[in-house]
Amino acid sequence: MKWGDGLEEVELASKAIKRDEQAFLQLMKLHKNALYRTAFAFLKNEHEAIEAMQEVTFRAFQKIHTVKEPAYMKTWLIRIMINYCQDQLKKKKRITSVELLGEIGNHSDNLKLEIEEALASLSKAEQQLIYLKYYQDTKIKEIAALEKIPEGTVKSRLHKALKSLRNFLAEKKGT
Image (cartoon, rainbow, N blue to C red):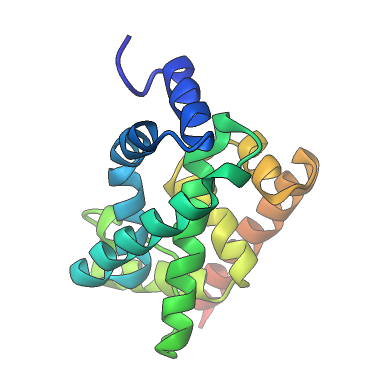
């Protein structure tokens, strides 16, 4: 078995929750790429993303003992990162956007801007939901546990957010 296999990851998370520093460091190393991608997606700046990684590592270490379900450790860490990044963006009074333009790939600049604008038209909660589901591939069940709401509620909120995106893009094309 290699790190990243579900069972060993849960064991590692369980040790980290009990304040095992080595387990915590291994856990952070395991999720480093996902956390960095999340930070960069929000902050759009390498230096700020690295700073966010340092701050989130510190915050996670302080609060790791509060994690109830080791299986959702990655989702918990990403949530801390999202919250930190949104706080940073508020401080700078920037317009927040959740999309990962760099990962959209080979599409035209206009399409990237339309997607960015469409996502920015959503509420913060809807942006987070879209980000977790489609950019981090977080399962509905994990989102429900993270948000402490039923899976059906997650599905209906996701449906509503996607409908809003479709309507926004349809109106954009009509004008």
